[in-house]
Length: 243
Image 1 (cartoon, one colour):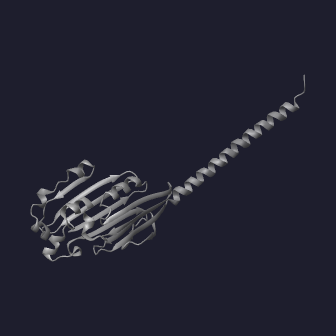
Image 2: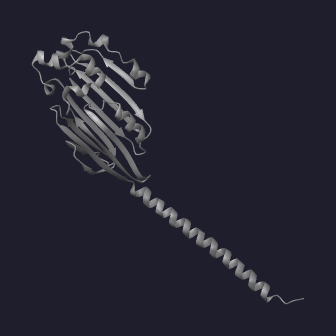
Image 3: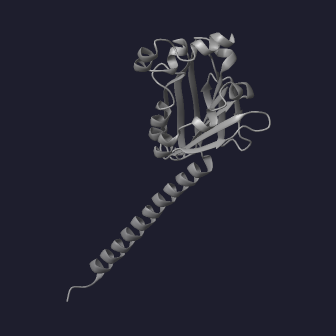
């Protein structure tokens, strides 16, 4: 099973999130009813676009979820819905600060399964089933969590990298964005996620400074013209003989 999550952020802080789950041929063979039993209506109601591709020739079943957001704050809310407090993706936050033409983007959070398989369920579910989810199934097949599930996270932020602990980074050819990728550990360890970029539009900043300079010059010229006219008028009045 492969589970990948990607977050793409635009310069204004809006963007999109995509979650792709791929069940391989072995998983589909073990649960042939999986395709027909998926109930994703709640996600559709919540605003997610859902696309389910039935098993292909290579046996893979692919489920893709997509959702757009308008602000970093909205993105943070969506990120918090990816997993529970003990799940594999926790405390994910996206922050944008600075000005329109000089902004800083910071992504942070933690990942992994320090609580093991128990991280895939909340306390109520754990109390109901009496054990960590999937534990019995994996034990029967002789598989570890690492064997059964691979998870990855990709985040694309505007601007050039300032700092990061990503497994890999790739900047766009035009330097307008940087993509960070992490492999999520499944061995009960914990990985802190950090990535920061700075997006500076130098041409726009220079144009802004030039516009401000021109405005100041225009004000000085107008003030000078007004002062000149006032001076000339005063001199003419002073030189006019009294009748």
